[in-house]
Image (tube, rainbow, N blue to C red):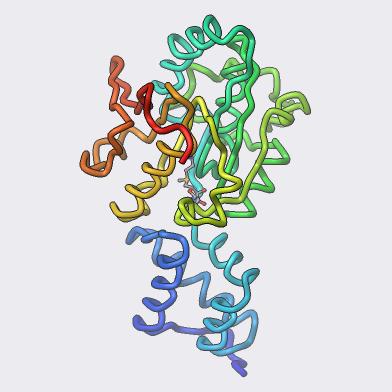
Length: 289
Ligand SMILES: C[S@@+](CC[C@H](N)C(=O)[O-])C[C@H]1O[C@@H](n2cnc3c(N)ncnc32)[C@H](O)[C@@H]1O
């Protein structure tokens, strides 16, 4: 039993926690996030008044202790209409084209690694503004951010002036006097949350409930934490099992530049429109494996 509230992990001990995290989630933390994870572990050990090895055993054997560790280790930075050029392409070209071709049918959109949900709500209100009914799946590994997403209540800090401001007029109807943003039931009903660990995306236990036939997938600012091998597995599964024919996949512009072309499945074609890259699933590609 540890009486003292100051616990110091050795480098070897810390590395063993990071190995568990990477093995089970695919996350390879960036150097700037390591101190936060170390603090989280040290705080848990002190709070539970147990030894480091005992905490590690709990982490390995108790799913809820591991889930808390994951919630304390992920980086959840996000905001409305992040990388607005991608939203502008959707608004100006892709969604109007969809509307004219789809004869009123809803559009299926998946915000994979949605964090608190700003991305999912941005996509839903954008589609609505183009006269299209959105059906958005918002998934993340972190159970706490998904709770937040379901509530549909956001701080004013989720709006930025440097990026996303071109579409902030769409948020105005949901702005409260206190500066918070609160979505109504109509918008919330367009969004379904799902806890999904992307490192397990091609496992048999995930296959059954993966979002299928998606017209648009946003998978942004999460590849930075994954190995090339995991990125390849995720891209393959999205192409084979999740994207509809002609479906589009958006990753962050910085990630697309870092994504090695050898891991891009043949059914995904890299398109460039103005200053925006995205992947297009070619017609005739495998729809559902
Ligand atoms: C930086 S946020 C990106 C949020 C949003 N996509 C955006 O671009 O603004 C990264 C998100 O990826 C999630 N994440 C990390 N590893 C994951 C995994 N293995 N499976 C699913 N989500 C994961 C984190 O919980 C976090 O919410």
